[in-house]
Amino acid sequence: MTKPLGKNVVRKNSGADVGDRNRINFIEGANITLTVADDGVGDEIDVTIESSAAGGTIVVRKNGGADVGTRARLNFIEGANITLTVADDAGDGEIDITIAAAGGGAGGDTSQFFPAVDPNVKKGTHAGLELTDGYTATATQEIFIPKAFATVDKAVAIIITADTGNMRWGCATNWGSINTPEDYDQHTDSIAANDSACIVDRLTAIDISAALTGCAAYDLVGLDFTRYGAHANDTISAAAYYLGVYISGTV
Image 1: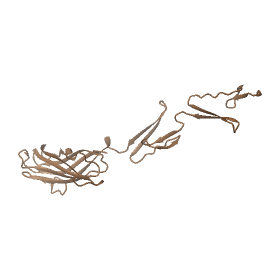
Image 2: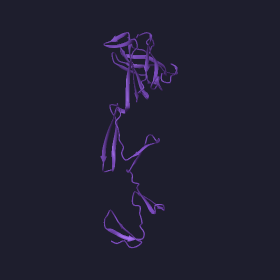
Image 3: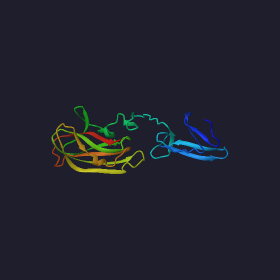
Image 4: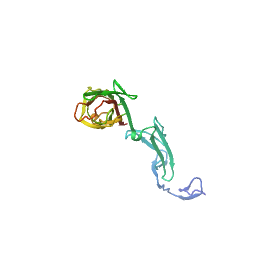
């Protein structure tokens, strides 16, 4: 087709001629932006066509911080104790990425047992500290809260008694952080004397969580667990054996 004087012949992708006109009108379609500028120096009209569709490029940042970069592809890398499952979800037009902790406990829990310090007796093959009947006897314990613990959710003293009945007991603590660091008695807590039912030879877990309120990672706790064996409420007519403290927390 011969170009008429003063007119432009237009075609698409080297196909058939669409028409010839004095003016060409560029129309922005879906997800397209147009920038049109008169370039007098180049004696031309500059037309810039850009896609505004999501997925052309992705801008990435972390925790609301500065942009890390802009790329057309993201690469997810499995770090320590992390597993990734990536699946193409064509129905929803997306990529599904599942991030899971590998080998973690349910809810991110962790626990640790601290055995009695300087045990002086054995119950079967269990080493413990004897809390003698008829006396006020105290077991002293050092507990270090591991760095993996965000909080201490529960703490129990493990006791075996040689008789069935109620044991009168109390608990006192003081602690400080070795990370900050703090004074050894920066924090103090206690549980007033009360009674717990025990069954002969049964591993009895006595909740002492209230004496560690606010403990967290890197705290070093000094704990006194006391049996009031001479008190009338202590009806166990035999020795009790303190085995240690079990704590559990949230990572």
